[in-house]
Amino acid sequence: MEFKIKVDEIRALMEIEAPYFPKYATQILNLANQNAQATRPKVVGQMSELIKEFTGRTLEEWEKWYLERYPDSIENATKKVLDMIENFKDAMNQIDKDIIRQWVRDLVIVKTFIGLRFQEAVLKKIANKFNLEYRLSNPEEESKGIDGYAGEFPISLKPSTYTSKKMLSEKLEGYVIFYEKQKDGLKIIVPEELENMLINKSKRNSK
Image (tube, rainbow, N blue to C red; front, side):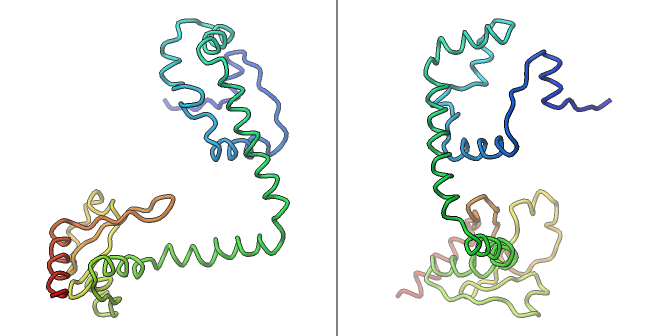
């Protein structure tokens, strides 16, 4: 049997009153907290460990126990979030239709294009690191699984999950370079064998 209990129901079952927040307030506060890092362990303690140390039973006992150990944490975290909310207010006053249009265009047009056509950026970065020329593959080369070339080396770009999906049976004629999409960009993994070949090629070219 599988079932789900929502947070509000857990509160009700534990007879803990739910606080009132205006509409959209929690989304804004969560974002402000994320930016301010107000409830990180260095501010409020490592909560997952602290609750294990607590031997009481009630919410009142837990609050007393916690505040005895971190008497300033709630106030410090509150100030951090409040300061970030003030920053948000300042930013809100500067946002107009033109800025919103630029943001929407960047999200819909630019980032979609980058997400789908980032191969050239990766090839260019690798080529630059080893002082080599690069080019994208032609349709015939693409049919062989080659995304482009760094110097004379055919490159095939694959996500880091490629091996876990058991797709290695796919016939590729290029050297495989793995990438992992992260929040702030791409993590590129060049296998050691290929890295050594690129280094040697770069050294030969520099002579």
